[in-house]
Image 1 (tube, each protein chain N blue to C red):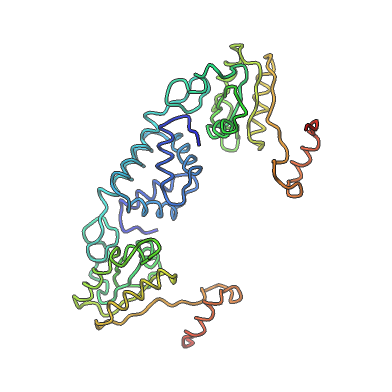
Image 2: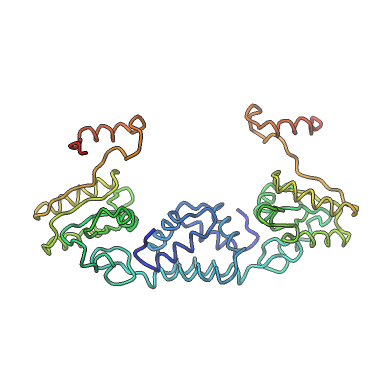
Length: 201
Length: 201
């Protein structure tokens, strides 16, 4: 693309670095920004910079936090014997939304993915082992996407914590509530038959 | 969505204001930014702010420019008797890419759209009339999308310039080169029959 302005081109190149944003989309975003007031652009720029200057990772669970310890870890009412192991912040938010979980979290910050060059050392695995070594944790729940990377990560962590007296579980995989059986994929349907659970009313 | 951090929430809200970006996408963008180095965020923020502080609109054609007069208007080799009237910068870039046009442009900065509250006064129509009044312009080419808003805009401008001795044309509408006739919509196909042109080899 030939831009009539270097300033415009720079901005488009910067926005095109965002995930899922190509040059065309970046140009659309930038043209939109051009129509905004200056204070609005300043707010956007400032909130971008604050991400590095103000955000912290909770030093207990490694979730994103405004403080050294996040609200969940600081909440004495939450069960510290159960740790829910998740990939990132979005999973914490999704699980918190269900109101089904009153334990604490451990945010790995990613999944093991050899193809992307991400190994266990790039994730918060050692800090998880340390939390378990401290002795308070009795149960570990893997709430990790049932993908190749997710399963690899769960498998690796389960091997590492085998020596400790913790119960390991994983979230149930099966047919989504409200969905039609005939449209379920065969792997999920097969697994949900094999992993059938007692019928409750 | 319940965010564990105010700083994060602010950033997500800012990015969610971009066109086509919802809260979920904004969160994905922000989590990506979090993983970047500080200089990279500073570049992004700076290029955003430069959009207001450094970018100008060419005072001849109202295209985006780094200078008071854009490169195209400053180019003496380009025919100043032909003006191509377009909606925005992207159309200028698209037409420049074709290498088929050696005239100058007039960038309206939008289209007449009563539903969005955009009237002719919000666009660079008066400045177009003025350029025509100056007497150098002999031909006006509407290179405007054949949509409801585009047609309204072309119609309005054509009425306004009727009194001046300028030839008005519009880009050809018809079947795209390389596309299959059977998949063309009826309106386009119908118009392309009615507007048939002499066969050339």
